[in-house]
Image 1 (cartoon, rainbow, N blue to C red):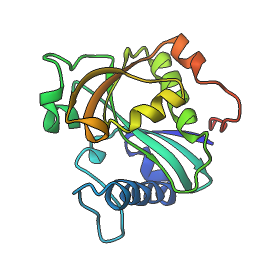
Image 2: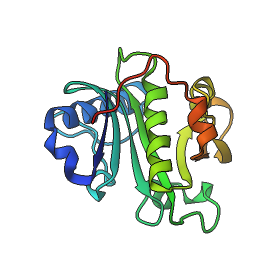
Image 3: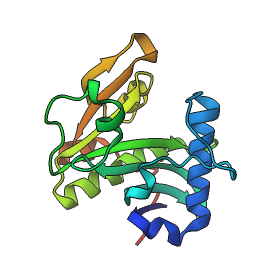
Length: 189
């Protein structure tokens, strides 16, 4: 199932919320070796989580399968505060979101990435958003291409698969159509 949480609504599902934050810790700290903090309960929560982001979460009951976080580029963002050297001047605008903390839980079904982006595209189209910017390491481009939504590469810092990239997804009907609906998780009512 895919669930969309607006801001503080994530706290109405505390087990799912904590499962997501623990999976983020496992992915970003344990597997990728990022030098970021983990709280005493094993959760990775950064300074952008308290800003009332939108979370798109794939789940099985209270078990987190995958997620991503959306914030408007007109407010505080990871891009503006940590990766400004990758962003073009004047990148922040209404209708453009920042997509970060894309995380897949260990053992999650292979369709979870596609499902998350499909629902993100649907949400973007329904709200009239233009698209989203994302910071990712170059290895992720392979994943994005596999599921049919490789972003437009705006800039990169570094070489080979270790490069940090800034990419842009345009929310369009064509992009949504590329995210095939077969073998997907249902959207929560």
